[in-house]
Length: 291
Length: 275
Image (cartoon, rainbow over all chains, first blue to last red; front, side, top):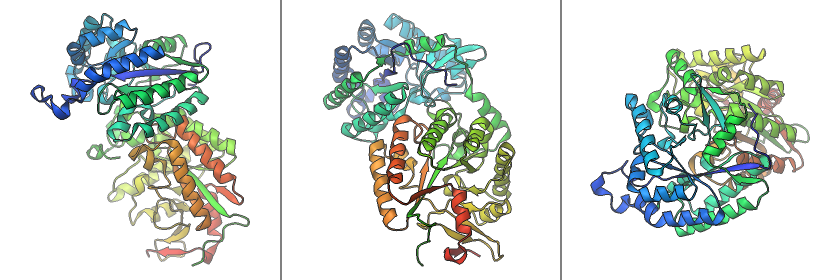
């Protein structure tokens, strides 16, 4: 299982990804005619935040991966094309941040349509995907593999990318880590000062251990990293990361291609053991939301 | 009652407990271990091995509390825990974090006991409730399985004898823990504290304990997400163990080692009776 090897000269790879999540995120809680006031944090991301984050990535020479819902890409096609033009990767995130575990038979169509819309707008067919809310149905991985996606980036179960075997098709999984994501901390109203302390602790240890560093950002004005103070904190953090030996920023597509080149033993679909268990074991779905 | 007189030269006893909490935690709730719910896959893939490496580096014993389902899903990992000299104890079947009714509780306690015994070829000596729930029947079943101790109560700062019946043998050794302050879950699940802050908090707890009851029970989860399996949080644990070890007279015990020592103390150990 521990067969992961970094490319020559790399001690740890940093996967900087951005969940674009503009109006689509707000529309999970409200309707089009009410995208005002408290539901304008997505608009903040595309108006105030976008130029700041784009400039920061440019300044550091970092190629990032942006996961964009197709509806957000349609609303902000120029943003998406600008990102692609900067060399950033555009990857899939559904049509409008659907909860994939609730779509049933419609799921495959949603994934397919969002892929095609994103390809038309960005000019590149997305090879990566991240499930909105990190919620997958038991069929999501299989659909992604069948639709030609190269990788998913929604799990939190490993230190390195790895492979799934989905009925003979291979899909790379690039696992993330909530400790290195802005959303959980900022939605808990923590200060960026506290979050940066966490990120320093986590990054320094990951660098020492030589693992993947999955840094996950949002564009938004509430749970995202694009307010001026947060961008400044991020700027300082990225400088710290870059100052360490053997660090390379790698996009999802680059990590996926590298993972495929290593001859890793693929893992079975985790849904299989789960579905077997459900057949023979009573469970308590009624407390599913409780810790 | 005077504090328990710990073994000769032991100024403070430290018990490190690792709750395996693999995919059982989600699967038991009917949730597929995918995406945001895939955290339980981390212990079996990375966290347990990383924590065992850490314990070996420090040369300290520890107890791993393993749900039966996780032992079925990750038999090689659980065997490895035993092979490397750490204690394996029971922790529910599907990490049942709810009240079990009627015969269900006894059935699941026996089921997990059988799974762990069949896998390791040796008796299980202790149990920690997943989520801390027990019933008035729990301890009798544990005793009938030959268990020496329970580590689920929250009511005391020292080990004690917990009596559940009037018979001479109707008691267990209780090794109480605290999941609000001496548990990684409390911080990484609820307030997302930076690992260095959690370390300072635990040090402050330890400084108080070593001046008072001298019994320190730390609960760790080798998970990603709300556990300490990942590198940064393992490093905080590394530094915590180093901090404790550096103080003279601090000794580490597996739960069974501590329970066996407690059993020898007879009346010197406080008894709490529910008989």
